[in-house]
Length: 262
Image (cartoon, rainbow, N blue to C red; front, side, top):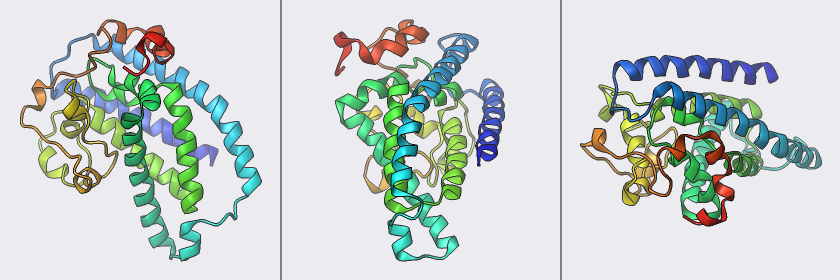
């Protein structure tokens, strides 16, 4: 399983660099800041956050999992679906749980304190896909663990969903002008859909929460589309654009009392 996880990240990194090349060739919006500097900051931030979050969350999760064991009861075990149906429902449950978690991050001030770091990026491209604060990642791990336990999702299915969702996240954060965006957006989240979510305008930012399938937003009436996607102002008004591009600033920003609840 460790080998599969390593291969996941290896392939996602390759896909990331492919998207960096494509979005430079077919940009959706004009860049405001140096791409090299932002990519370096976002990837450095991602690496630091990943190490810190997992260092604290994984030991706790392994202890809890050891207490309950592998044979705990869950919805999919009770229903006794076939392997194919179990995989389909697992994928749907995991993706819907990501939609719910994303909305929680925007609705509850405590979680927004961490999630706003992701939104503070003054430009939006494939590197933004990795810009998640370790505080957000820490709590996300527990939420995900709860969902996996509740539905008794097999780890093989979790790995498959993670693999697909990581590709989806890099894709829909990219600054890529995709010719068939409107058609594809009926089913999955595309760059134009997600760029609206990264708007400085609150009504636009408070929409399009889906991760893989876009129909969760349509079902919950949180879907929004605009014709002027290229004109959207990306980022937040709570932090100066130059400060949002400084590694130390975004690492400590959630713990700055002056900015609590902003």
